[in-house]
Image (cartoon, rainbow, N blue to C red; front, side):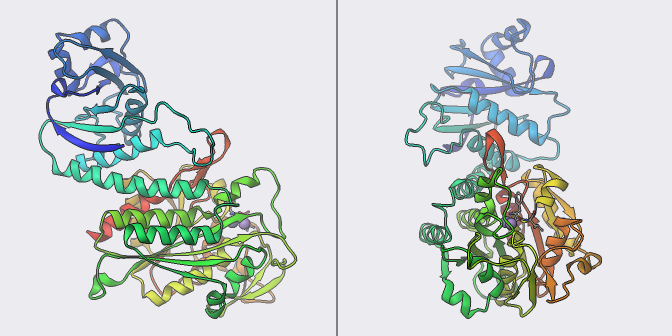
Length: 496
Ligand code: BES
Ligand code: MN
Ligand code: ZN
């Protein structure tokens, strides 16, 4: 789907379909009024008939209106003008794209006053692309028969009353972010028998070739040489060999203050059975999504490259499987992390932190400006925040605020939870420097973050627990592509 702007009156756009808005109570949006006037009252007549109410999500298609250049006019219900929120805009775009029908090759959207309070045309254009691409996204890579029919219009045109460079830029930004989101979804949705650590490494190399990113893959030997005993202890339960994947976007050169990179660390457990502390079989298939943190790092790097951000960004992904076997971690095993700190593995299912801690230590070598790790880390975070907010943890208030602002702007919400020393005593072990989970079972998401904090002392750091937001279960099962919009927004802000 291609996106562009066109400067014209809504009634004069020669296209397959022009979508115009109707607010609650049948109030026509500005560009809808132009179409109404040109058609000598066809829209008002439709409102008067009772067919068009402006109810959010409702659509009515009118054809061959006299005086209107487009072959079809799609009336999109927007709901109340005063309550017109971010969500309402996103829903309206989705409604328009889905409502256009299979005959519409080019859809023009006249969205001039579909603007939530406090948002500008750049934001609107960006979200329009994301919402439209989301609306038609399909997972059919592994289906032998592809669904045909409404994959959405080939072209979407944003109809503007005057030229707007910010809107054009917003469309380009939206396209880059959507490309990142779709990479993340694709990798997340692939099953663990295909999406192995080696597969992820190959995908990173492909991304490197297509997007001019420097990619380095470290195999087991080199991971051993780095003394990543904690990461390797998880990996050794599986016959699939581990990989440490490093992807670099070098947008800011190597000198000056701007050169210190932002490092994104992503949890890449390609399947989490729990290991010897095995999980219940119910919905265990969903643990193929345990590499969504890694996938979001891939997606954010793709977006950063396409946006040509003047910023150095480095993705670090430890990838392995967590399986039970004769060589797997056993409860009570003590492993030595790359940092030298020893860890008692009380529960082999708390494996994410065991691979991330070594990646966090590895990140020190880049002298980062900031390190963000992204992980489907705890079920406790899903209990706390559900599927709405990602959990955000940082002891650094300024960094936390920056990320929360990025989350708001990107409509990819996050909610801050604490990382405080008061919780650290729960990680006490009688036999090692720390245990890999809390002794009381309370505050599980916080404890996970506090564990990671012990390895993230050399730089400003934040942790995103995306266990509830990275994918959906149930009938709409699938990866969401979150938090790529949040991460990309953060990177765009940092790039200035
Ligand atoms: N990958 C899981 C976390 C998870 C759970 C993600 C549910 C998505 C949905 C993680 O490795 C895990 O198993 N965590 C344990 C930690 C516990 C043993 C301290 C959990 O949350 O139960
Ligand atoms: Mn686990
Ligand atoms: Zn896991």
